[in-house]
Image (cartoon, rainbow, N blue to C red; front, side):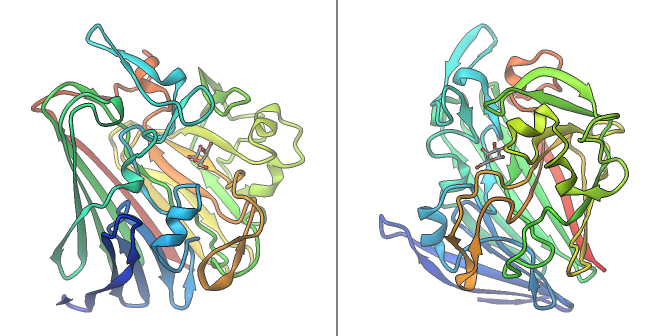
Length: 351
Ligand code: GAL
């Protein structure tokens, strides 16, 4: 398949097969100096390149994504991050979810959206769309849900992700993308602790030693998690901050972004210390999970034989608050029949 836009083209190629025999397709979008690759397994972002530098950690084919944990590049749902003890109550009924992270539910459960084969739709020269139908009570969540994710690449380096969902019964959801960025390049052999980052957040969610939010928001000001002015990610490592110790010397926390929830606003700017490549993130969501790849096991082999380990990449998961179904103070994660979930996030690479 070849689709031509002004200077944009989408090509498809085989990306291997699942153990059950279904085969996976990789779609390549090019715009100016930028290339994005995305596959229908998990509607996963596989590459995001500025020139020859690919800033996304990943694998050479779908098998790598299946064999290794960590949700590399995938769409996460129905509910991103943790739900305490895998339980929530909606309209008086308690729902029980699979606990796949100790005693808590994480990233949609045993088989979340990250490990579904989505239906690909080439929408135009510059947009790849993936659709998924999530049946009533899939992973314990109520409501038949129709979902779509669209990736649009522009020649100024902007990658726009738009998520839409509808349901036929009241339900909860929190959809995000779990890409691991290394702005020095996924094959650079460097970690991300030397990157600088700015996060436009005056508050963050306190977490416990299982990385589950406690429900309490704390000021970032005066702590190692004050990223409102750019600073090195690695500065948290030796800070002695207990919250960072819970994240194994990194960060794995929900930052509430200043400004109005729903407004499309500036979340983050990060910069690779070696490449000088910068990335902005904008979104309309309430918050972001800033995760510094603390659980990536050492010696893992990624794209082109590169070795990944702790802190090889960082995630910017634009989202509602973790455990929002159990937190009356969080923005409502409920979607009702007739309502529309809509979430837009952009990343932009530049120098
Ligand atoms: C992150 C989460 C981490 C970890 C990771 C997957 O989104 O915040 O605690 O579970 O996903 O390895």
